[in-house]
Image: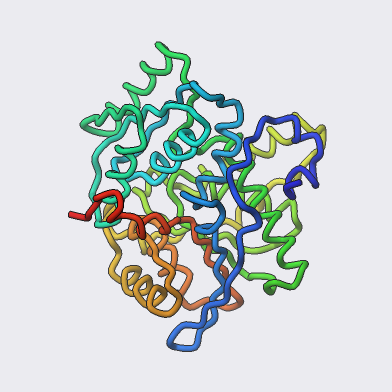
Length: 326
């Protein structure tokens, strides 16, 4: 039984397909300068194609059956599209992905190639607005299971509420101290919203610091708080319980790691990621995790936990698939 259902037994009525291996471990990392950072290893939360998206997909693919069709949307280098296609295929379903171009880095090129291989159909639109319009038309014409951009919806966010309760259990078990802040990348906001609500439910008054990886207009704090409220409303409808609102002051957005464009590497993040890989073997992506790591390593009082949302294990098999970077 996952912590979310242990806390709210009525939520067992919501369809969910077990895709992950939980709890994902926590790991202590000491930098070359002697600073201590804790890492939530969500890159290890599934047998293959793990990362934060697995948690939302457990709910978003909960009704998918063999032979079904799944429709999703994302940038060309989207790990969401890749992970959705991988897990839909494992369930015997076909995936249609509608994508748009953005600035690419070496890992996002590899992600794009894998996604094209795993999807049954890929439609590359000229820009994001055109991709959204094509997705709306495809949804209207077909019966595919819709998986929203980034897996971000109240239903998908339930997986991240569970993640926060999982971390609280690990703290109570003595596997790590109570963090003063948790740092997570901020893209579409589903992971951040679920974690913020989950920490509130668990009684952990930690600051959730969201490292912005997209344009400021698309990633405001208000969006995270609004999605947290909608997710709480979903839980309340199913369980009949009343939940406390997430205090706005416990959700912060860090803007200075963006790098100027979605997918563009942020040099301090690149350097931090290289040091982490050399010390631990953990590999990050430049679009999300490296930027969040840079934010996590910035000087702050109290213990920090870096939530690693990217699964890089598939890179080891790139030669077997004949995929190379640019």
